[in-house]
Image (tube, rainbow over all chains, first blue to last red; front, side, top):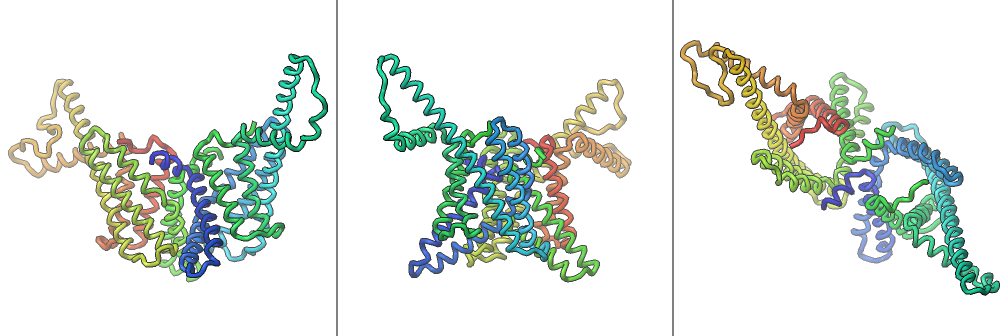
Length: 247
Length: 259
């Protein structure tokens, strides 16, 4: 219970738990809706989902400052490609949180002159850009790790070839796809933070893709994607060594 | 900016900010009503206050476990009175949060059959018990410190070779009464006690903060349970003051009263 307390003492920890609950409700609703006689349960799930979703807005208030701080940190990254990607991503996140705060103000009745749909669209667009840039950075890091692994393997093969005193032929081009996939799998297995971050961003991007109409999917897929990315987020908070660090 | 990030990363901090905002709205609503502001504005403030209240309930969803954990830790304290007061206070707080969770379930539609009034009364009762325990603990600490101070003072007096004629005995509510002149003597004793209390509280800001906070908080359940109806203005003001003081203890951890 001590670990649970420490985890939920962080606002982000609680927020991820609620997010997981929200998307689990969405997924369950999608699975139970076509079944007969489950209307009451479906109604309860819908109410839980909407109250958790509304309540989570309180967790996000003030995150503009968090995003600005993340932007400042990403400017100091050493590698140019992650520096560019992350800085732009975090700037988009700042705008997303600003849109989110405006929508919160409208939902509590502080201001009534807001065009809700327009601000939601803007927010979704900037969230989408943030996720896209994060995925780009993930792809770059994966490519880097794969290149390093390939280089390492080539060096090992060369040294073993020198030891044996004969050369291997050009059979590499045939199973290039297979060896690339193997390399990808090995790189991701060796760097769980990178795998977690990629999975998280990939699952998250389904949400704005659906909101913006670029790739419409059903609530079941979105619910599952949201649930998986929330669980990934919970893992990075519970085990800080699993968080992808910026060099 | 870094300080804000560190501060708001604690979920307690966000909840306290929402609490301060909620009681500020309550106070503002009461003031606007007294001064006859537009019903539109009053409705907006009331709406914001109710949103804050529900939002806070969600923010507090995990707090029962927190309070139980604190109670577990408090069982290991060395002083018997402190151990009892703090443990019982935390247990009551855990029950208060549990009732609060039930209220949230009712309000959010998960359990529509929940009797809001009954559970609200229950939660305020547990909150009141917890505050009474906190104040008892504060009174005990004050008494210990006063005894300490007055013994130090009387030792210093004895050491300096001259006592105050008919000086105060250390501790003990009833020292051997001197014959004659009872009322002025009593008044002098009382005044010296009050001065000692002021000195003790001045020298221990965490204790002073805790006393003021618990006293302000006490008005809320007293009003809600109907034991002492002080009106929404007083409740709002007291809630706001206690929220600001608890925010202060979060920002400046040395101001927090350690057992």
